[in-house]
Length: 147
Image (cartoon, rainbow, N blue to C red; front, top):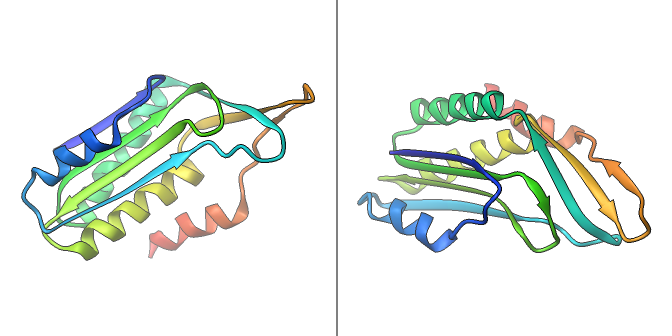
């Protein structure tokens, strides 16, 4: 079972976890990312090219499913204008063993953070805007999975 959703709507973390838990494995791992509200941030705006984003996320989910014995994967990433505290991303994995669930979840979120084709623009209280630059440490974490 794999679920990939690129959407503007919010998602229900408990419902996503329930689906993964129902797979009957021994471990479910998840990560939920929320928009930070520091430094006067009013909103984070995410843009993407739908076909390209869907294809690349599908490819990395399939990669995870070949690397680890997974019973289920759920990846949800939102786009649009999101305010601080809003859920932005969910990654959940289910496997018969915790190591596979934990490692695959970390692999997927590391990849999404550094390689997923989303462009992020911050909007601040003072009217300023800024595009979010890629961080070297995020790229290094994703690169670490290449071995």
